[in-house]
Amino acid sequence: MIYPADFRQKSFDHVMTNPPFFVTKTLSKPVAQGKSIANIENISLNDWIFFSLKRLKSGGSFSIIHLTERLPEFFLRCPLIVEVLALSP
Image (cartoon, rainbow, N blue to C red; front, side, top):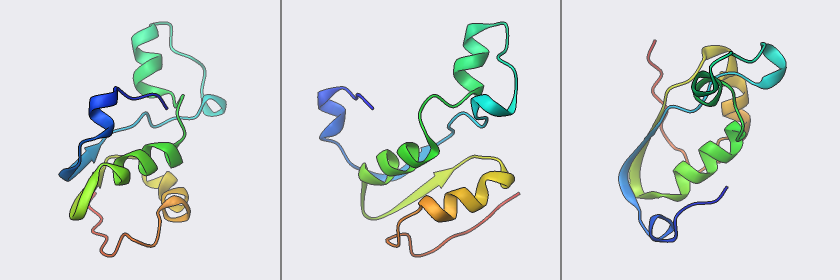
């Protein structure tokens, strides 16, 4: 991933992310380019989680909006530093 230099220096008390839900293999690309960017993953879920947690201050909180069927992948990717997990429908 490429990030603006000034952003790489910042950290936050809370990081919330809503990455694209779908991987390319699971559906056909939408006609509208904007929908494709918003809905189809071009950066892995692992990279989204890594980047989000990297920007998080020690003791901060992290929220992610994603599909429940990708939850096992989240658990595999989430480092052990995440101590508490609250799931909401």
